[in-house]
Length: 270
Image (cartoon, rainbow, N blue to C red; front, side, top):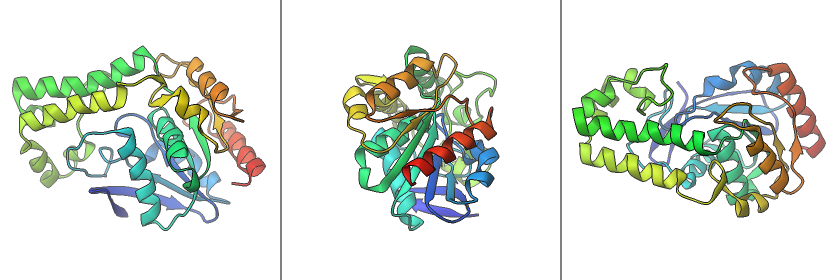
């Protein structure tokens, strides 16, 4: 199982193909690499494509730390370092779109182009993600860490946050359950403040950040309450030279997504 040690986390990743690198980051608080399984094969015909589980998602493992946009970006750059990738196109949907935009702003020398899709933001987005974190804190306070580790209701989008590895790794679960309630609750509350307490015009991005992106960008809109079309329009309006791709997420329109992305990458030489 391929993993890389990145900023104190064990990051699971998969890669395919060769050529200019593309690193894809999935959405949610715990993005997993499998989200992109339907497009990797075609992208990998002429590119080296890396997908990965974020530090709390899938098979990746991390100590309980406060998530921040700084850390999310450091994890992408750290994974690139571990894999010997000097520069890459960064793609991402929802939370992953925010990470791609942040990386382009913070590490322009490491990013060839970005593909932010289903851009998230707004009240519904912040309420949903915040509720997942704060409900985990509330459950820990009322019933303890073992109750948190039992796992959330997968049909409830406001259900409490837990690292996925709890369900597959007994040692990791034991370590998770040994975290003090006080430390866990503080981490959840601090993560809410870190991710959502800012003058954000889309999830994780300010107007200053978007105007400061100098990387070639192709933005693709969302179509629901968490990913309102207007948020992609904001990115398109504020990021200098940003191109627009009228296509739904890769799980819904994989062929059209690949067509738009490959044309864009060809046009910008990435």
